[in-house]
Image (cartoon, rainbow, N blue to C red; front, side):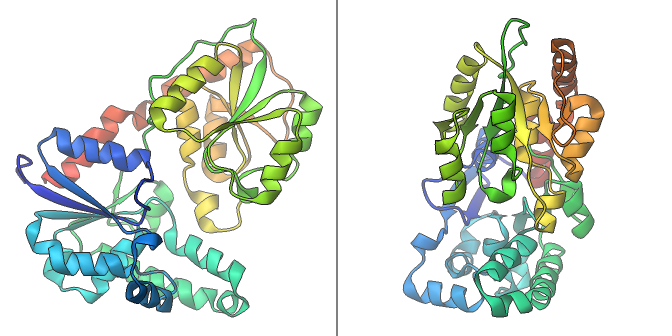
Length: 350
């Protein structure tokens, strides 16, 4: 497809105003190559009463604002980029000629994750979770074979949707590299959404024993973790930042500390247990060694030399830290912005 002047409609389930680094970067790539893009946000707050009622009937697996947009606007665009499961599944109600001009991108085991969240809230849905998972995953699988292309971001998702194109996450923090300094103390860094399932149960006690600072950049999602952060002498919440501001914050922080990136995601469901953690790739992009657990993809990075295991953690020398730093820089190359851009763009130009 000739990119100059071709029109792409991007539909996302993210609320308007949400800054999503990958979506912004992908939109930038398309725009710089001459595609004319429009982004429509279909977050829950944008749905009218009828759309909310229909979405609720389908347990919020299907976004009916996205359905109406696809139905009304598909003829005005050369391609449609569907960003997430809820805005993708409406295609089940639309004819094949619309599906054939769509590109679907999924960045999680969305069916598994959504069923898990539903089962936490309702005992009846918990008993039906296998049926729900089977039904909606089969819909996703069937439709993903009928669209122009499906993009996934992990080997785990590629196994589930083997006809897809694998494009790894790339970090918006790429290039923010600071050489370690032997005279600086060590401290821990946490990037991203912080909630109980994304941290080790005893981590705050670990901080007390280590007597090292933890700096948190992101969103804290539950009261239990908020209380732990507030009570800890060794934990500082810096805030939630867009990529450029975060780069500046971390550059300043690394003038005073040699950082280790905390990656201790628990495994309550398949998405958490098998997906690549964006934070791991962000840490590698900056040359920050990982302090991680035995979760599959994190374990692979640590075994390749990019960090240290939390569950048998012992203190380390500056030389060991510097070696892990060098390995992170080297291991990040397949995830680079350049590799990502080439692979992503080819999906829309073919």
